[in-house]
Length: 168
Picture 1 (cartoon, rainbow, N blue to C red):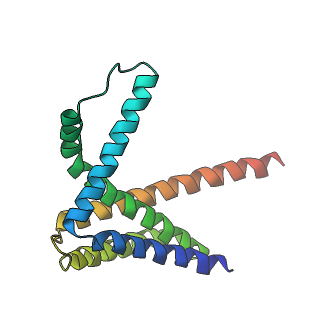
Picture 2 (picture 1 turned 135 degrees about the vertical axis):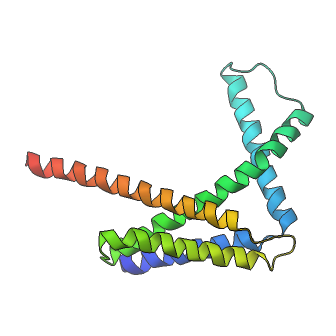
Picture 3 (picture 1 turned 180 degrees about the vertical axis):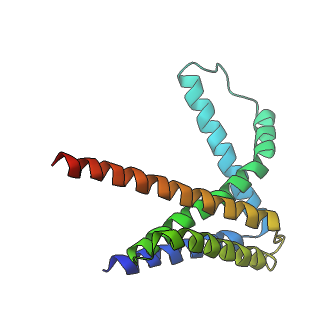
């Protein structure tokens, strides 16, 4: 299959994934976040106990408090993360279509911003969820960081390949 088609299919699959995440009602979404934080806390505690950093596990109450404190920041980081990935997928798809480098970053950020707006609007129709401009902002920051990351990788890749060409 053609790389261009595969690249755009990945973009649309990721957008569907974001839409699916946004389709969860507030309770379901919140519980998934809390469960993930709890699992990370438990695994981290197990690892630190095994290597001797900590001697005992926190109580269930202390773990629940940690989960409550980390829930909102975790959810916001996840917002940025999914758009970080979306921006990289969009950039890759554009690069496969030979779109000029200078335009592609602005177009990618704009498309991610538009999708974030539509996603927040979509959430206004989901039970217990609301559309929030702060989430659009966080999503957009994630896409900007994704673009910067992509550009850094691109620069490193070209420098590495340039050194190989020069050695020959």
